[in-house]
Structure formats: structure tokens, C-alpha cells
Image (tube, rainbow, N blue to C red; front, side):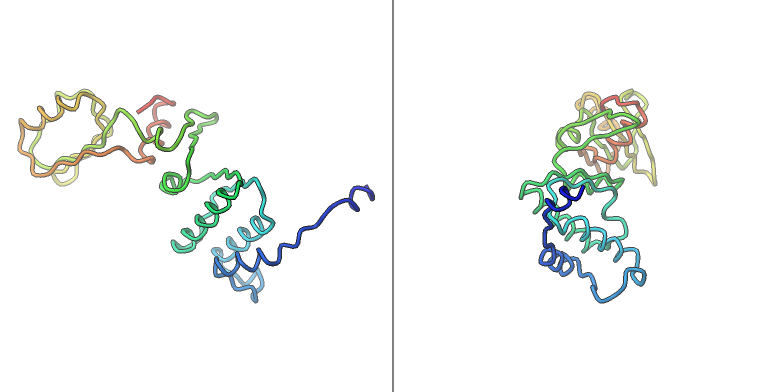
Length: 197
């Protein structure tokens, strides 16, 4: 044991620690127990990153950070990744995953989907929002139908021409068609036991 401890090399992290504290606007003159939750989170981030590890496993790292600090945190993480660090990030804020990660996994006791974020986001379904007087009864491929003040919103996985024919039989004042976001895909996987949207 003495031989092992004598062989350990300690890394001076003071320069990197100062840089991280400055970037995260952390007041180093205050004691940790005097800090807010968000500032304690900054201390944890600095502690985790100051020695420049090659593997980062981060669980909900941005909770408690204001939006400017969240943005700066992800700048730092992207820089570390570009320098060769591998980053595993767990977050319930799926928009963070969609904006900042290249791959994503969805798990429910086991991994039920894992792919590049773009591939997970590309589905057969489209998010439809239509305003006006329309009848959607003949469309069986509709999921997650919601109506609010004459605006119908739903996921549609069928033939787009059939959808447009059905909608054109009514009176439409506004229509938008988009890809579902990662939040919707995530929820769909949970609700349907891993079945593709």
C-alpha cells in the first residue's frame, strides 16, 4: 500500500479550477454552506471537471442552474467532448438532449431505444396542428388527439395525401405539419413499450 501511494501522481488542478469558476461565475470567497442550490451545483461541476477526466457521467447536471449558466455548462461539456472526453448525460429535460447530444438512449428498466438523436427524432409520424371546422373520424392513424379552442393537435402516422384530402373537406384557417420533438417520442416509447412512433 505504501509503494502504491508513493507511485501516485497528483495533478495540479488550480489553473483549470480558476478558469471553470470564472466561466460559471462562482464566488470562491464564500463557504459552500452559504451558497444557493444553483451555486452548490456549480461547485459540484467544478469539482467534477477540474482534473479534466476522459469520462464524464452526469446525472441531471443543469438542475438549479439559470439558463445562462446552463448554456455555459454545455459549452464547457462540448469543448471537453471535442478534446476527446466521453460524456454520458442523464436528463429529464429532453430538449437539452436534443440540442446537445449526438446519441440518445431511452430506457424503461432496460434500454428500449438507442440511436443518433436525429434518427430517433425521424419517425413515420408527423405532428399536425389544424385550426378550423374539420372531421377527423375517418382517420385511424391519429394518436394523441387534443383540441383547444378549435385547434386540433395530433400525431399522424398514415398517408399524408389521405390526411390532406380529409382536411380539405372541412374549413381550415391554419395548418402546420412538423416532426414530433424528442419529448413526444420519449413519451410514446414509454406508453407503447418501445414501439416505434
